[in-house]
Picture 1 (tube, rainbow over the protein chains, first blue to last red):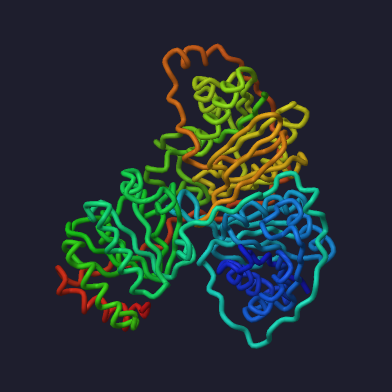
Picture 2 (picture 1 turned 60 degrees about the horizontal axis):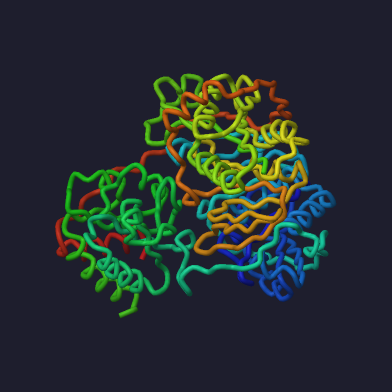
Length: 329
Length: 250
């Protein structure tokens, strides 16, 4: 029997979507290894109330580690807690999200354990005494299949690569003592700077609506905001590098090879030509829709559905239609 | 202030990549290489910190075959004082193996800061920096987009998805640098001339066990060709119908 440990990422006392996806990826590995999934949920007192959500998607045991000083992420004491649990529990693999937090935490845990790491993976399977993973490289232009020997193996799971699904048997919950005192941590988070209040993050949004130069002026992004609102809180608005370089939208909204990588269920590319730099950030989206006035624009080569025409005329009509479908009008 | 910057040689990402005949790597023939994007920011940050302090030394370290000397020379031409090549026949895809070799070199070096780029866009791993911190027992802040250092302490802004953290840390520390923090300077002709005379030491890389290997490298599955539904606002009802019935995403 070989168990798999998953670290469930939270922020501000709420689970992130990638937490459920990490447990889902762990579930698949544990099933093929004939073992259990244990999930660590770490945070301020009260975080344990979220344990059932992890149990519902495949964690057999949810280990709740609470500490007064864990209102913010604390890399040193949280990594020490994961490491202590791995040493005690004999895990085959330890999984994190390939998010800003998981990419910070997972290498520390791997180095402390002397374990090899596979970062930003989109699949994982047992292969004899190795684990085989797939990992997009060269900004998604190539896919590497890696073989990782050793046990345990540390992995980080690319957001949106695994779809969380309910399981028949919900897991049990038990406490886990923090293995290090956060007061002794040297690098300490003193403040969280939140993005736009209530806005869905690009990485978490099932629908991403992106605008390019074809929108002609920064004010016209209000059309995309209205379209996003028509999706009833399921959509976030992104932009191309050309647009963020012009200062039309904040730099943090840039989708592309040097910006954010997104992989939503539905990606709407509005007034975007489809430069390589942009496509690298969204090509793994499930369904892509392009609206562009140039019928030869490269974006139409990767889009599932395209409409040729002026985005400023088409978007308001689309917004009306989505309102009707979603009942948000 | 003594700062080490760990630098990777990587291909320019605006190129078309082909899989080599081995099927396990990229065909490097004809590809243009440079300092990895985020490492350029790290070099710039290091130079600005020592310039502001008015004293100190920036050391560039790169692991790999002799072609990394070109990358190190670029760092020297930007203003880095000296370079160290940790010589290895190839750069393994095993981040821990690399981190072990870098740690062996950095340990006892008396560095106040050890900087890395946030990640390299070729391997897209981003693990070596925090691994080195762990192996050396140093505090670490990843993905720094703002940095303030003085009096043996620092404050960094760390980018998250749709939010950021403010992190305080003592020196010595390991930091990985995000883009946007400082625009990397272009080497001036004077710097390029001076770089030729700057010391570049070559040592064997004490790589750890390599347990991660590439089984296959492939082009990702092509997206099936899509269709243009129509022109102008009249095409919207058909789009919505297809999104509902065919793509099933509404």
